[in-house]
Length: 607
Image (tube, rainbow, N blue to C red):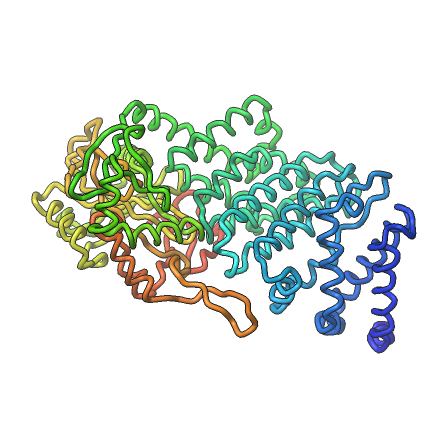
């Protein structure tokens, strides 16, 4: 049968093209019902043919197919007459169902860009708008939502789209809204609809997790929390009561609750978003709907404990006044935010007067720095750390150190002959509780002047240790390094002395951090955060590793940001760590997960 269709593909396509052009796109000939039937036939035939391996190449090699599908897809998103929500009750099928199979082909994106005059922004805007229109369907067609989410996630994963930061924020909010809509949709006994709902929920959660991990994680976490991600995850479990996931399945919803959200809640504004979500969940009783022993409930309860514990830390750090300083090195005036002017270019650097701004532009480094900050902001790669966030992160880490004092003492045993001043106490904000670990400072060797000063401060006495607090930032991690006293390990006091040093400053958009620290960037998953955009022979843009840009990052080194040597040399930061919490082991550059349930593995991880 398929062989006959394959041989007659040119004639079949001529008929499909006629059907689309005269029965669907030309809405003056037929009524809404006939138009809906014709569009359904067109979309279904393209989908059916794409599922057959022998038909993939003919579909891709016929350029009119993609252009026709893209035309219907665009008009559905932007024209009321072609909306999925028809005024007369005749619901058109989502053109995303016909477009979705093309997303698995490498040349598709370039061909799509050619059809929209090479504009990424236009293509992304259509995808977001199409999903928004799809969610307005009454009743909701979950299979349409799944197709739209697949197309949108595919566009977000393309490296060429890394520069479209606004698109990422809109997309993550739209995908979260889709997750919420499907999770809130009334349960159905239809196994086809139930399977579509489960697939859509898993896809939405997977898209949120992967985009947060490889893009600008801070902004995306804020968007998804604000859109109700936590409520949607809990509400979605009703679709899995009758047909639960296999025990060995790596559920992305659990990954979000147990790994992604906890590590980002070390940022004070994100904790406040999570606190608001928690209040809504408690008021609606969503968590009470989950069954005892449910892995999702277990992950949620752990996240809830993390939120409550860090809320207490936030209360302790409230009320500390944040001062700002003039960026002109010859001035350094300090004061409240209202007394300063912000650079109109980068929108981040503060000056007390216009004269200070002119001096810093001519004699300082802001002429170069301003351009870099603008590029980073537009590309979504900005990684600044405010003083309030830094202060809160330090407070969270010190609180965790106090709670796991005995564990830290045990972790020091393998280094009994090594003084604390030659070790680094590392803190990654994941787990319940978080388990810190030691590394030798020789593994963190750097010739950076700020690092050398920090090292001298630590070695001034024998009761000091450098602690490194990791703050996730999508494809990068921000390392906040501090020198703390180790006296708390002997006497178990209620506070830990945080050795302050005026020389160490954090790039904080002009904020003057009372508790000085030293900050540097690392690279995660081998993704270069700083790159230039080059042109392919086809005209499309692509990310190109640019060592020149990396070398120019020295403008951040003193007295602001310092980029770690592993990023400059191109050696990826491998996320190899083992968690006591949940007996989950995460290894490798790609962040792969392996769930270990056997007792032998548990004992190995304990050791």
